[in-house]
Length: 263
Length: 106
Image (cartoon, rainbow over all chains, first blue to last red; front, side, top):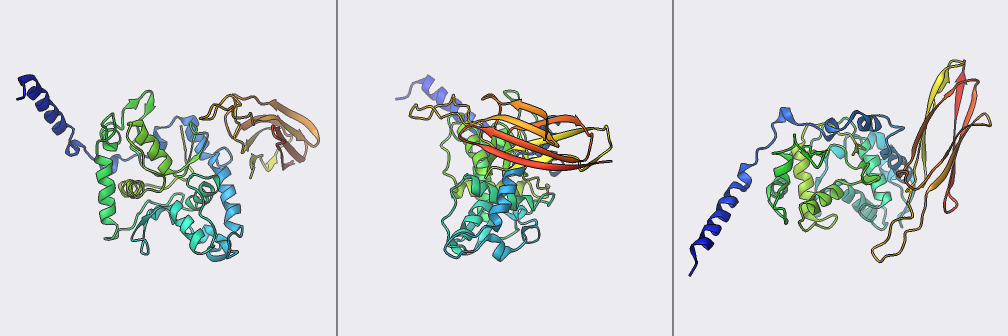
């Protein structure tokens, strides 16, 4: 038989659970959406604005060289099929993650590059977060600078966007937080002195001063997930791609900034 | 794949103060970090940077482990004559990179 205090505690937990339900989250109205850029100090903004000061451009330069170099058993370079990336890759990154018919699920830009390497160049896939994959991704993403984010409106993508949204709203980890609790509800506040921001993925892959390196959106997501002390997903996991897809659909219409700089 | 980004104005008036910006790709491993198994990650940094203007050294910097990855070094000089800026980065593990940029002084 349960004692009265135990029941009281249980009820309190239930009450807390209701208060914590995802329904309490309010999504950011279209007009109030802001890129992480607008939260930065003028000094950090200046680094992003100047292509000779933006360290992300070092990866773009490497990516441009890789774009032209022949690899794999097919002996083909990206440029042999896609020619000039300035034309062929223009605004492409603004549409990713995109639905892959063969796999029957969305793939992000990194996965698309690796699929291309395996299928068309007959080369080994590049490891997630390796310098070469970041460089190629940065080079391709840079061709979408200024383009409005516009992930495809595709009925096949809808269930994946919905799952990404579910994950965004889901409280998890020892701190029992969902992405939404910070990035929808408290984006105008600060956490340990840093701006929380709205979490729009406008500039990936981007150079984080904290990382002293370029990093992918999945690296950012993984560090956020371990920040709430939850179990992170592996690089390339379908859950992370779904989350990426939801974030991109949430940022629809915002201009791409890759390679961005963040503190 | 080390690469440098250099920003030197293409043209300047004689006597004008110009800003030179350089960005070099480098991990700048401090030598103070340890791996998960406790071994020291060996130091790998750029130790010196030199800029020469038509062969004459106009700027020199010694770099130390506290400097972040991909060092961005910017400085000013007076545009005296047309010619070339030569940049040189030297570091651990035989690291040696050069770059150059030319300027037209009117």
